[in-house]
Image 1 (spheres, helix red, strand yellow):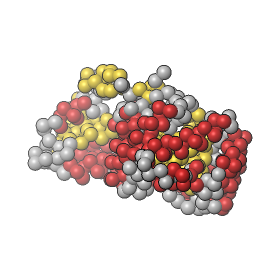
Image 2 (tube, rainbow, N blue to C red; image 1 turned 60 degrees about the horizontal axis):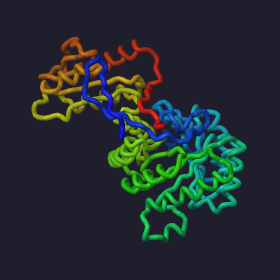
Image 3 (tube, rainbow, N blue to C red; image 1 turned 45 degrees about the vertical axis):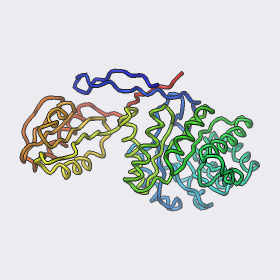
Image 4 (cartoon, rainbow, N blue to C red; image 1 turned 30 degrees about the vertical axis):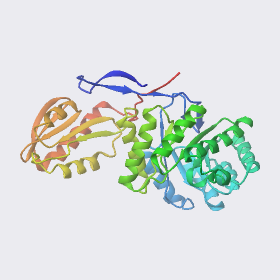
Length: 387
């Protein structure tokens, strides 16, 4: 059970205790210079949606992901041309590049020769143990990490036909089959993922695998859906597992621009008090007491502050019931009144601001505070690994 420890907020006031998550200690591996597993921070990754053969567009999108906090960038490798394009991508993308390979093991060999630091393989469609062995040998030579990526929709034929067993059981068996082979071949620089579009199947599979293996785990709900639905499903699936201490790297899979995946990932980590990057905006749901256009104000504040990496709590409140209290507890906050708002900084009221000036005043105060705090990576880690 996670430990319970007291927490104080940014103005030093005691607030309710929170559950301190204790992660399962897994084996640490490296994807390039990014550590995965052990007590390393839970790494955030995403995947480009561009045609990998279009190196200019792919580099541009990858850099947007990195700016948003992405620490590992995965790209699709559907053919030889895409594989050879990786040489340029690996040189220009400032974080480790992972090649996503299906069906053709030769593409994995080509990708490793171009300089990728990781390869995602799906054992269910790779084409046999002999091909896997060639891939593993090359990965060992090149110091490339592998991910055994098992999907419910592409299990091996013999497992697909075992309808009397749950999908989760069959996914775990598939992963352990190949993990065992890698271990027999003295290759340990690998992680495992078990993904389904069903949240509960995903959770069941990862729970089971976590009890059976010390390999680092890549957690996510695959084919989760659109921005809203996919974020909800991912927050549930990933959130449950992280709360239980399961997971070493995550990807939020959305039918949306990839940068939204990174922002959603950090929102999940922040909600669990695991990692903090950027501004955490607290806002009320609005009711009949609200006398400012709070929805528009919050949307504009989010847009204006989404580039920030300094971890700050910002409250945007619409009425006098909870507004002043929430605004006082935030680093910067506003409490709305009739056509106006009261601006707070570190628990102290600063001045009244007209509604038309609320966004500008709030953003300016947040940027001022962030600049005074100095350069920061925007990330803090509040979990520890279990012994």
